[in-house]
Length: 308
Image 1 (cartoon, rainbow, N blue to C red):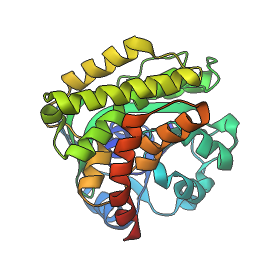
Image 2 (cartoon, rainbow, N blue to C red):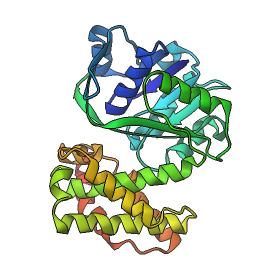
Image 3 (spheres, rainbow, N blue to C red):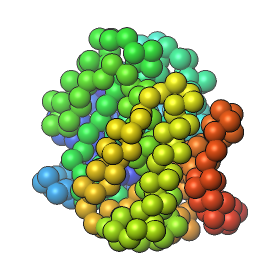
Image 4 (cartoon, one colour):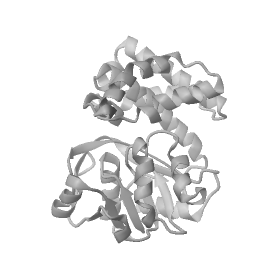
């Protein structure tokens, strides 16, 4: 397949690199120091599953020069989607599949606006990876996976073709008949972890072992389950148990990208995670005191980061 990867951070760098290794025609949309590094040194990934380097990388900051592709993977921060979508319009043709791998629930709708609902599929991923320096990614934990599906739940040849591209690249990509439920499950996992991590400023191995911070996470998890239920998505007690088990299974040094951004004074995905919970909760008439409290505590730093 001819695939464009927009964003070369932990997610785009790792999964894009795997796809390129498997002889897919991958073009990375990058700029600045990242673009220069990809062009001069290639893409380096240090991974707990085995290091690899893509020596010759097709990278550009001019999407028009790349032409129309079979699929566009969005791996930028959630708040960067609208601008990124406008910039990469030349990549998208009548049959192009547009797939977001962002945290949060709103990316499919955000991408449907510029590209058309018929081109967008639901997507999510799991990986603990981050940028060491431009063009150099470290995958430090979690068995990487991606998941894709039509937003209306129907099976489709284009999703299966896309899925097979990842499987051929050695990436776990299980089928799903309900990608919306899968997106909510990911949202349930990442949002409390990000919030508690950003507030405590310690890795998950520390805060999950302390009753006070663990209980705060549990309250947030239950609140998000209640919001999901109000919106017709049944996560239930199984969702709570599964999420806690995933927390306990993470490497002790694991942190979310939101936590790392907050600690580094950068704009974060707070609006796509905690703020999204409170927006949906208000609309549904659901009380979310733990999420409201954590959002209130994190908003001042987010405002400071964005003022820069």
